[in-house]
Length: 299
Image: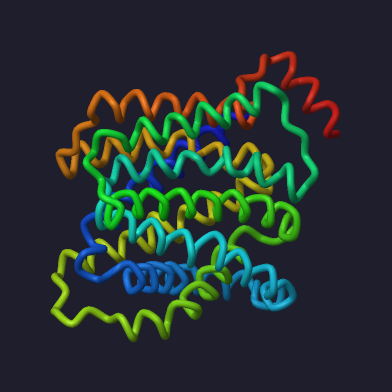
């Protein structure tokens, strides 16, 4: 992988890791659905001027059905589920659960794309799920709160796994900016009516409005342009491995900005999740010779 893509993945992971902080501090005031409506709307509004300048409207209309599905699977549903989970779970823990997305992507690939799994991949899946159980154990989570929040976060990761393959399959040749902008508009439109019905009864603080603006612009608009760019350049399987890095920044931001501290169980669980996901997806560092062979094969 070229150094520029590694740098892009690090920046993307930092932006996405920050999103769990923004959701953690804002979801209580806005509510999960309204927060995500504002997140996707602000992202769409931020991207639209450049989108129009680049004359990408025709391309988006051409692929509107696929843009709709990406908006649903990659934004509306998973964003709302993660926002709901942050009502209960710490930002760092939620970001670690987000790291299971590549593992689910590997499983989905077997059933949808007829991909094959090695014994190592299967072992990784079991280790990953065991890591999740360790991660959330000993937290005193009740069925009505924490365990439902964990299930919501894992379901969101499943959506990401589906969306990554869907984007690569149907929107490989589409402009990353077109996919990012159109999918955010689609997501905002899907959530418009529910968010109005669930609009907070109490006034929302100024800081919460600032947080949702940053969530939309930094952790959504800019992040998704980078993400879809990476999918087009290095493929869905490699691009989604950015989820390995998100927990690092999620825990870092949670620690620096919220004073969150990982317990021993959480640390062990997090390591098992990352090891499991790595084995499940076959992620490994390639030697320079291997990279040269792959590059020659693509020419």
